[in-house]
Every structure is written in C-alpha cells, then in structure tokens.
Length: 192
Image (cartoon, rainbow, N blue to C red; front, side):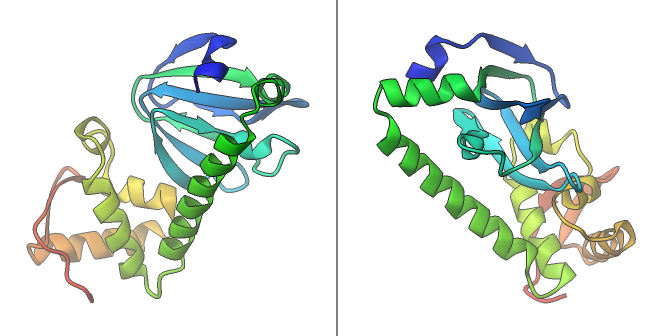
C-alpha cells in the first residue's frame, strides 16, 4: 500500500458518495486509507461487499474491466484515487505481484462467502445473516441506516418480505429496533 500511496492524491470523501470503477475508458483503483465503503454492482446496485480501511478496491479490473461497479462511502473516508495504468506500473516496477496475488485470494474468499449468504435456502436465512453483519458494523454505520435498507441494499429480497420478517422478529423479542434502526440482537432463532 505504501508504494501505491506515494503517487496518489489522497482525498477526503464525505459519507454516501459514489466513486465509479470506470469513467469513460479510464479505469480506477481506490486505496481506502481511512473509513468504510460498500462495493456495488452497477447493473442492479446490489452491495456486494463492505470494506474497511486499509484496503485496495478495484484491483480486479487491472487487466480488463471485469467488475463494472462503484464504491459508496458509509462514513467520512480518506481515499487515494489511482488510474489503473499507474497501478500496473507501480506493481511491475516494485515486483509486487506476490502481495497482489495474496490480496486477490482474500477478495475471492470474501466474494465466495457473500455468494453463500445470498444463496441461502430461505429469505429468513438471508435476513438473519444480514442482521448479524449489521450488528457487527461500527456504530456510526449501524445507527445511520435502517435494518430494512441495509438488507435490501445487499440482497434481492422484496421490501415487504424483509419488513414482515423484521416485524415478526421484533414482536417475538428476538431483536430490538428504534425507528427501523437495529439496536440489539437478543437471539435470532435458527428457523423462522
């Protein structure tokens, strides 16, 4: 990361801002130095992953545009924005291919885990997994998004289905929410 940070201008980005992986023909890579972002697929705006600093986002597009998407800041972030050609030159000049390969293995593992959660057998299983993720978010993130919105940004579940499950969990005393914001998980049942 130090090699990439040297040639990049670091920008302070406010929450809820979008940064595209590609603008015109130019591809970009983002070095998240401080903060937390979500990575979204452009075709349907699905949130594919949540990433906490320090991290490198967009490097999978190094050779060609494979992931057409954008990042969205969740909290104030310090981000170094790099053109992909510059990233390639830095990696080559400093022989960083092995650390890059290890980073890509971590990313592949996270995408596999995300895919498993989204292909869970029932809507409840998906909601349960997302509630567990949400409760583990930093308070600044968790307290500024409704549970319904958090879940729907990361899944293809309907609003009514998510609301029905959340209402049932709240009525059963399994979760505590105030104005839609998840406050506490008492204990989520295995089956619903």
